[in-house]
Image 1 (cartoon, rainbow, N blue to C red):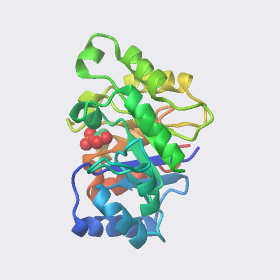
Image 2 (cartoon, helix red, strand yellow):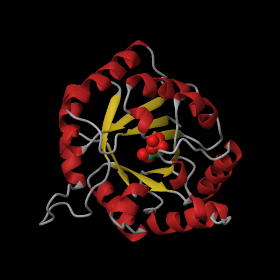
Image 3 (tube, protein in one colour):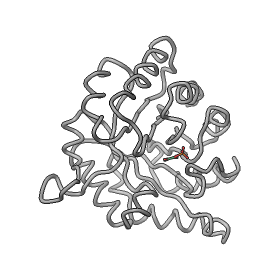
Image 4 (cartoon, rainbow, N blue to C red):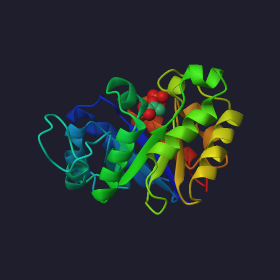
Length: 242
Ligand code: PEP
């Protein structure tokens, strides 16, 4: 299985950030793992320009969220078909910041997942427990329920990202044993060829240990994906993983 290292830029990035993508592309042209896909999900405003400028490189581009409908009277929203038209290959759905800021339910996440598949793209479906849920010993139950309610048909091509909410942007990470337990649990609920990413404070300093865990098939990276100098070592840490 090929690893996937995906960067989620969130609401960061102006046109000038192209220099970070160019720097990453140059580093990867010099040396990059052969068995790893690399994705950047910049703000929607940058997807088309980046996909065009960097089309000859090993970097793919994706969306951070989409509307469930292909088009319609939904001011400010972007459909999966629009991302496909802009040159995206994948779209993140169900990120915990979308669930929290926009009240997205698992049913919404499933609708968006189906929309991404309808557009011929690959969804990255995010799941993860809150700190209170982990402390209460409910992490597996919570993630199990999210998977049951938001995964598409088993024959579809999709990626799952396990992102404990309390680890996102905090510098905190679960223990390696906790990550291993959760990824084995998610694997038990999905096909053997579905990639399962870990996300939550992945950095150059912890990427190698996390990516070495069984059933961790890549990473979803927020803060450390914004600078080529941080993201590239994470990409390199995925080399030879599978
Ligand atoms: C994320 O945004 O999905 C994420 C994991 O962020 P960070 O790496 O900054 O914790």
